[in-house]
Image (cartoon, rainbow, N blue to C red; front, side, top):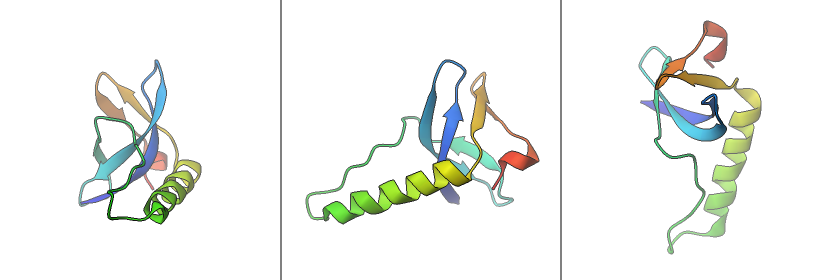
Length: 80
């Protein structure tokens, strides 16, 4: 399974979430809670910086996805 960060539009708000993809590359789910950036005590702060850089890049490059009635609503142009 692959994943990336995507901005999700829930209608009442927008948030950055991890989005998961099926074997065909279509989005098929997302993390329940918006993305947070923390690291374990034995990791360095650069772990957070790396995740933030990835999130920023994904949020800029990938189109926002809409969530309607608890389902992702996508078009082929949304999937990257």
